[in-house]
Length: 364
Image (cartoon, rainbow, N blue to C red; front, side, top):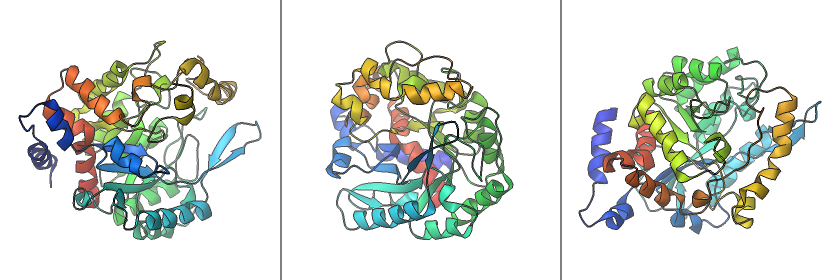
C-alpha cells in the first residue's frame, strides 16, 4: 500500500461524523510513538490509545571514569523483558502485542509494538536481531545518547556515524522487517541510516534543531532525509528540547509539529510521549512545578557541560508542558491542533495515521 492510498483510506475511516468535534474525537485513531507500559493497564484506555510503540528496555545505570551516568541495556535483561512483556499482554483486553501495522484495529485493545532503545542487547551477535523479531520485537533503536558498537550517539564531543557492524545490523533489520529507529543518534548516524535503509525508518521521539539548537534535536536535513525514505518523526514531551522560552505551553509543541510539516510534509510527523503514560512521575507529584522538578535533571546536565558536549551551555528551567503531563495529553493535543487551524484530516495523520502508515509499510 503506498502512502497516498493509505492516507486516503485512513482519512475515510476516521472522517468527521457530522455530529460535532466530540463525536469525531471518539472515533479518531490515536497512537503514541514512544511510551511505556503502565503498571495499571487500564491507563492505556484512559489515554485513548489505539496504538503505541512501547520501549521495554531494562536499563542499568553505571558511571564512567568521569562519573558521568551511562545507561546500559544488556542482552540478559532486555531478552527477559521481551518475554515478560509478551506474556503479560497475552489475552489482555487493554493491549496486545502487534506484529504488523495491519494488526491495528483487528482486535480490541491498543496495538503495542515492542521496542528496544539501543542495539546494546544485540552486542556483536547479529543473529539476535532475527531472534528478537521472532519473539515479538518490532522497533530497534541504534543507540541511546552515546556511541556504541553500532552507531554514533548524539551526546558525544565528536560525532560518528554507523559502524561497519551497524551497517550490517541495519541490513539485518531490513531483512527481517524490524523498523530501524535513529532517535538519540548523531546527525551522521541518522543521515546514513536514512540513506542506506531499504525500508522507511523512524525518529520515534525527538524535536527540531531549527527551534532548539541542541544535538538531541533533528536538523531539517535529517527530517527531510527520513521523510524522503518514507519515514517520520515523533515530537516528544521533554519541554527543554521543545522551547527555550521560560514558560512551556502547548503552542510550543504545535510549533514543532508545524515545523516538521513545513520541512517534510504533514505525513512526516506524529506524537510521542517519552514519559510514563500518566505523566513524568516526579512532576505530577509536584503538581507540575517545573522550577522544582527540573532539579532532578540538572546534575546530568552539568555533567554534560563539563564534558564539553554541545548544547549544554545553558541551564533549563522546565521539564514538562503542564497541560500535557497527564493521561489525557492526546485529546489535548488534537484540540490544540484544531484550534491552530490544522485541517481535520491532517490532525488524523498527526495523531496516529502517520504511524500506522509507516508501520504497515515496513511490517505489513
